Image 1 (cartoon, one colour):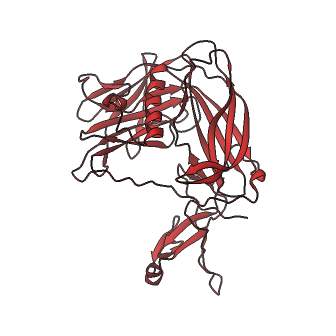
Image 2: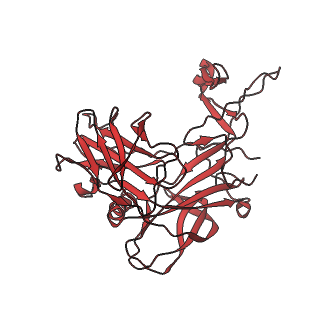
Image 3: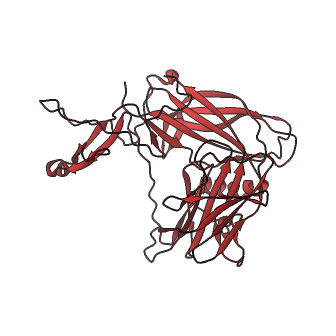
Length: 387
């Protein structure tokens, strides 16, 4: 079985001006980062609530520009964060860490209800969003999966990918703008990599990497197999939105919603989420999508591009980043066996194959590494995984 090594791919850009990374949380998953030129301290409030079963949260952070131009965030702790349903029912959020305020476990927004976000900071400043209506979303009626040996452009090169297209039907009523995102599950066999050292299973339960001078000097990295089943979780990083201006009451056919790199010959499970968003949310997302696709930044966008639907109720001149959205979710889980990609060149995100620590004579090493539950990894078999 092929071994899979997955890590986050980062593109490093150098700028002289101050930059803020605007985290737009799509359906409470991973942040989509955009760089925005600013010298102003900006409060960023973001979140999407829906009727899915995943954890739902609101993020409250403050961007603080520095003299070096480095990106710096301050988590807003001690705030009172709540959701107001239909102007009367209040649902309080609980702070955990890193600026994340979670709604109660099991919370689901209801179609036809209206929701407003309210935040009171420790300094007494009060912020509220516009009231957002939970619209019904049509079902995903079909899908097509195609393998393209040059499916994803990466710089001047291309890599193989499975392209996933969906079909749906737009309701007759206007204003049902669409947004798509996805969650990808890949079977993971490498649960720890130690650079310049070896992995020790103690202290339990996580273990640690212990430095070894000779390995560090030689630039050696060792990879360690997972102790039991493990899945790596990827999230979509593109803003995929569409207006219903030309599709009211018609079928939407072959909408490209995901491009999955050919990481390994084993199959993958992808969870496609389809949502409808309000006209104002669509316009906000469209600006971000256009800017990121054209230049990768919001440098050329007007200052209003940062401003969403959350305001300081006592100071409407304050710039507040982010957006509070409400969306009914329709989910389609698709298993792709990758048999049509056999023999194609795989894409290793570390730029190398796995390198295991050599086994000791007595068989005591190397140890296995635990699969630690995070938002990007889980030992629990995903719903829809066939094996």
